[in-house]
Amino acid sequence: MTVNAEHALERIVIIGAGIGGCHAARELASDHDVTLLESSDVAAGATGLSAGVVAPTLFYGDLPDIARHANEFVREFDGTDAFSFTERHRLDFVSAEEAEDARETASELTEAGFDVTYLERSRLSSEFPRIDSPEDGGAILYGDTGWVDPYTYANALRTDAQSRGASVETGVEVTEITTANGRVTGVETTAGRYDADAVVVAAGWRTQELLPTGLTLPIRPYRTQCVVLEPSEPLDEATPIGRIGSEHLYFRPEHNGDLLVGGAHETVSDPLAASSDADESFTRQVASVVPSVLSGFDDAGFVNGWAGIDVATPDTRPIVDQPPDAPDGLVVSTGFNGLGIMTSPIVGPTIRERLTGERAPFSTAPFRADRFDVSGSSFAYTSTSEL
Ligand SMILES: Cc1cc2nc3c(=O)[nH]c(=O)nc-3n(C[C@H](O)[C@H](O)[C@H](O)COP(=O)(O)OP(=O)(O)OC[C@H]3O[C@@H](n4cnc5c(N)ncnc54)[C@H](O)[C@@H]3O)c2cc1C
Image (cartoon, rainbow, N blue to C red; front, top):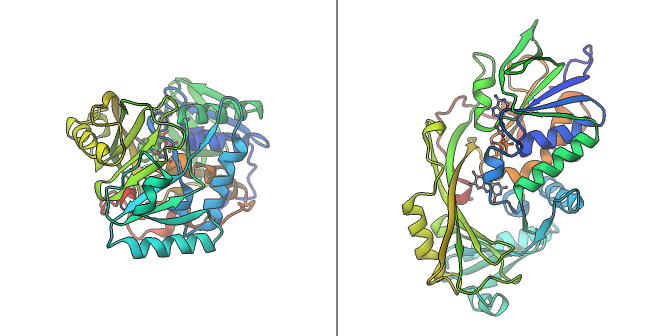
């Protein structure tokens, strides 16, 4: 679904300076007239609230070209502006019943060329002294994972986009996408009108409300939470990232030795009414589970906690495409299911392919908008913490 070749593709407006919009702007700015419009500030939505865990091999191991592309991007981009990628092993704990499947997953990923092994519980503590598996099985060990600071990541992309010629305007809210004769013509905003040959809607959970009447995406907003704990002794660089599947919790060390713990996914019908604080029940769950996995957390201090809104799709993968029946030149980038930071490197090449026909270095089919047989938000929600 490329923009009709009879029409010039020069001016592109991108709505939303989250991680998706910033990637799109950086990719397209080198050969188009790109304007990135953000109602608030760069990374003001889900992006700035993210834990920044990067583990594409785990979540996209079935699509190896995509996992590789995402893994390579953060390493190549490392050092751009203030952005850095912190490499760190990741442990995904599994129960004894899950151990056989986990061994198989590890060996399939190894065969596909990824750095993944299965560790028996007895080996966990010798390899990772502060870890005590909460499960009686073991853990899948990923050697190619890490984390980023999402705010710095988005801003480094924004700076790079600007150096390639993009104009970035914050504090400008798009109120309407305008069309004529089945094509987009631009956007109306709180700062006036912008003409465009193509419009990329990367507005997070607000993407749906910006679409022309009658266009309904299979997406729904959900809320998820993080808390940061301070242990009695700071975590060191040997402390891995981890996931406690049975508790739907994940964790990663902070640079100062604290621990960030995330989890608690629930759909919300009104994101504006949802609390941006971590719930007491979630904080209590974290406080009771973490000491059984990591030493030094029996009397941990509570540093802070928060909640944010991301967007779910029926198959947990994003929609980066021109939706069926959308006017020509309209492309959306949304539905990252809590994995938008690690998945974001696919956004630029996929949008370029949709708009210009130039092929991305991986198959973009998993991100097509017409892959669902449902529309609207009536589908059952699957959290990526269950994958
Ligand atoms: C608590 C939490 C933890 C997470 N942890 C991880 C993690 O560890 N790893 C990972 O990969 N992912 C994680 N995620 C998911 C990730 O943060 C999101 O998938 C990703 O940031 C989505 O990016 P986006 O650009 O699509 O949307 P957003 O970041 O929400 O950006 C949308 C932008 O559009 C702007 N906007 C909206 N409407 C308009 C308008 N009308 N006009 C102009 N601008 C508009 C908003 O202000 C916002 O800045 C987490 C998310 C949360 C909430």
